[in-house]
Image 1 (cartoon, rainbow, N blue to C red):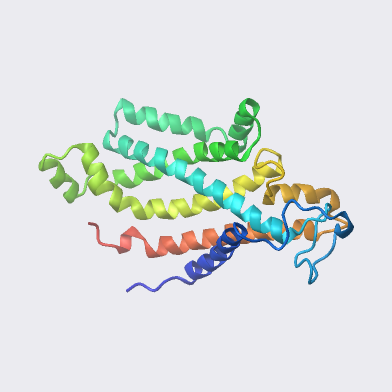
Image 2 (cartoon, rainbow, N blue to C red):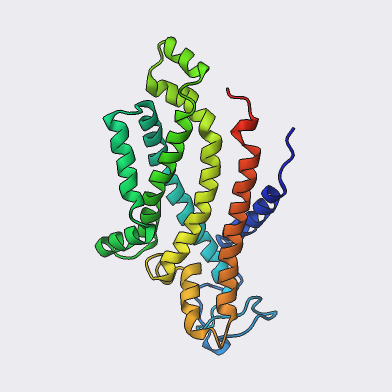
Length: 273
């Protein structure tokens, strides 16, 4: 039995902390996130406010907890869009390698890759307006070619194997082979890529919120908390410190977990089905 890597445990622990904070925020936060108390503005961490308050007197811990919920929700849906749309396209392109369909799928991926998520978000925002939904849409669209390429690359390496050739001799069609034999054997690649893209989704959501294209007030967002702290950095550095640490530790935890999963699910160390 393979030993579980340390980075997987550490990454899972860090990720679990922020997931727990997001789940707890559904039922409870130390203070209402929309509650302003000007008399308590810019307070440093204390027994009353563990992480201090912002320039409106709002409790930073409460905002971080709800902000975790926002970031996780955006990242989950965006990665889900990438998987649901990208994986079938990648499998389809691999099944029809060298065909016009393969060229269309891959050239379409190249076109999307030519525009960063921020540019896509700006285009979507110009039409629909800034919101968390539009941030999800922008990040999700950018995830589609990522998963399509991973699925296609993994599938191409399997199409020449004996068990796939046997399935073709048995009369199974390309799409049935892709669903029954190819997809289960590239699931490990997709899981690892999903973990990595989840962390990138959180980072992208924070970046979009920072420039005003993500979740809009009064919904708390880590990126907008950083943007709000810019003018207060000399008076209340804790306003920038704690949201920044939340982003760094969450992304670090997910990347460590992705590295650990890659070690555990390394296809070279597993017997092909």
